[in-house]
Length: 177
Image (cartoon, rainbow, N blue to C red; front, side, top):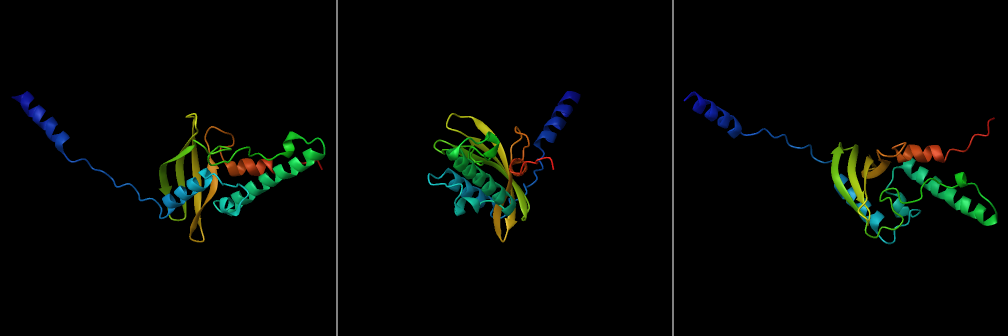
């Protein structure tokens, strides 16, 4: 009889309703912004130097990307007239959101969107046509009532911040003076 009471007692605990906490709602407009970014980046006519593309980014990151792309153009011009050092080129050799030069077969999956109404994080996974997966977190901020990417972070690279990497790379070399 004692075993029966224990069994019923244990079963009654299992039957209690579980407490579930409602997930914090996503920041307003953040998912729509993320989907717009993905659509823009994966489109066949995406131009990294174009106004539509650069408008996805907050000013500091936008300026760093534009400076990096300009550095590539200057290096290519210099190369056509003679020898140029590899360090003269920009850091980016692929589109930083999709990690691709050509978007065919690339998928970007949104895993989560967390944060507030002024700043948030979007955890994504980029899968290339061969199935290789890269996890990238987008830091986004609200600017003039619209979201913009302020940084892209990838745990497996150093530094993990694209903004820091670009600013370090695009800094003029010190000549020791």
